[in-house]
Image: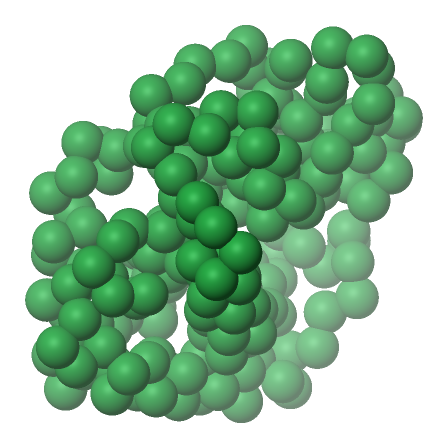
Length: 202
């Protein structure tokens, strides 16, 4: 297998997932800043132009971070990060989806439409007028999740999952692009500090 990777929270999630699994695979860097991911050679690998992408030994390619992590969980079941039974897997997928929709998507789009506009304006349709609203939606999502985290060590409870890794990578990214965690969200801040201590976060 080969992982086509770069900077940013999406590749960061897959790297962290692999680190938690204790798995290493071949990687090839793609220069996001220069737009290499939008050039013909990379589009032949992933026509969506997104990073990361996982090329399997049979030549097929998986993109989308949740699909990549789901695949890795199936072929490397040790140190489970999605679940060991149907109930655990459903619970992890539910929280991962909630976090993606309520926090990650609006946070990422808010960045692309504002601070990231110089990078993305020639690569995709951007909506600068929507940036502030999307950032506010992401903050609303964090506030909501903060309430759900009361008394929990991790998002799902007492086990670390894909949901935690996704949230950690995106909140860390957000903090660096003008979307920090509101100090009022004390449960999220405490959880974030615990996550920062994990070797996979380095």
